[in-house]
Length: 111
Length: 114
Image 1 (tube, chains in turn brown, green):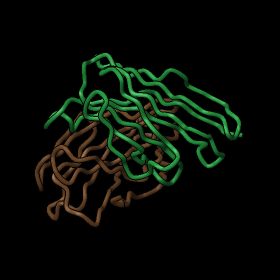
Image 2 (image 1 turned 30 degrees about the vertical axis):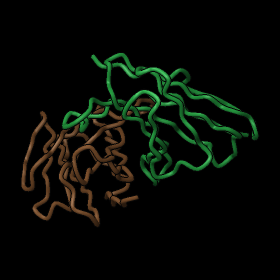
Image 3 (image 1 turned 30 degrees about the horizontal axis):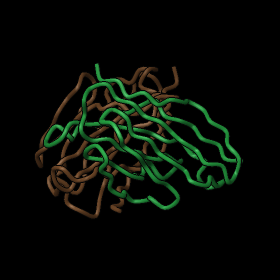
Image 4 (image 1 turned 180 degrees about the horizontal axis):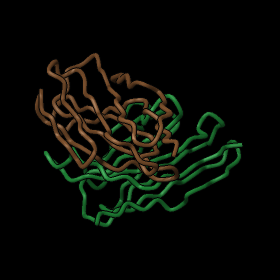
């Protein structure tokens, strides 16, 4: 299967700080998704991206579909304790095909 | 709201046992998926199904089988559980076509094989 490299693997930040994470692949994708998994729960979709260069926001979260179509970025502004969890990227080569998931970024927010 | 329900949150089984993990969705979704989640490896697709009685292998099908007799239910079967199948198992469902981008996940089943 496809390998998606997600970095960083983990982050420990102070409440109020901004967060950046990214995901890169060896293949060109036509869709990028970002999910968040709260402790003890399944992943929940945060943002979906469908076009190269697309920048989409969801509250304090902003994600971008990289121009090369091989990467995507997620930013969280002014982090709060409930941002704690694991963030996953997922990419799809073409519509109807399976999604490949990144290895996850574990975020800890220190109050 | 879409609901994907996995029958057990925690399971402990012995090596060699046959294990059934059940998943039910209530939104009439055509597609259903089984993933396993391991630290540092993310989510890896085991099997998926686009319709009743239809199944396709994902990236890591070895040691697993699935059953989809009804649209709302997708079962993952470990014929003879082994310790390397200790993991978190996640079920997901989605609509067909473009809307299949959005997969809705269950809360997961944490399986320990002793």
